[in-house]
Image (tube, rainbow, N blue to C red; front, side):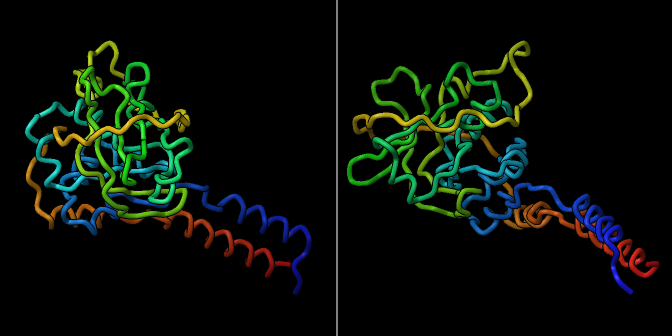
Length: 261
């Protein structure tokens, strides 16, 4: 019993037609499940729909905030859309890990965020500047930080999770916000969030030293750790069952063809 050329061709076509397409395999909720002190940040990513967008992208960086540093934002009681915009500033549409933060061309770079990619940010208000400061600290500053002499900035604390060139989760010391992000959306200008990739990085010359400001804010409700962990288990795994089932069926059909030959 041998496999003829025609049978082999059929087998190859069946396998290729059912082979899973390339897609992101990370899940931000599952990643943050290991950090009980970031349960509120994780919950808000889910309730605003940003967790799904993070999981759909192949290259992403999330600037996560612990529960204690979420308190100022919680006190603001922002409406859901404004809250979504604020959190979107914490999601960079490029990959930055600990090493890359300390190898910025010229000492700084402008990076697009999901707020910029959504189409809701006016002009370049959804861009965030990353800059290395004296002493080796790294700061993140939204471009639309207001007219204050000292722009609101947040400092990099430590890496949480790194999967090179796919997803990086970095802890920062405060919630980053801006007037544009917190502005109420008008029905005429509000548009659904776009999933296309925006311009990623524009190298800049290094700017002067600034200081971090912990006055950023954010709303939220109290959720138990058990509820968050259950949600992580529910959403944590990327389902591969359909692809595996299709492959199994393809091989069964191929075996049937070989037997007939």
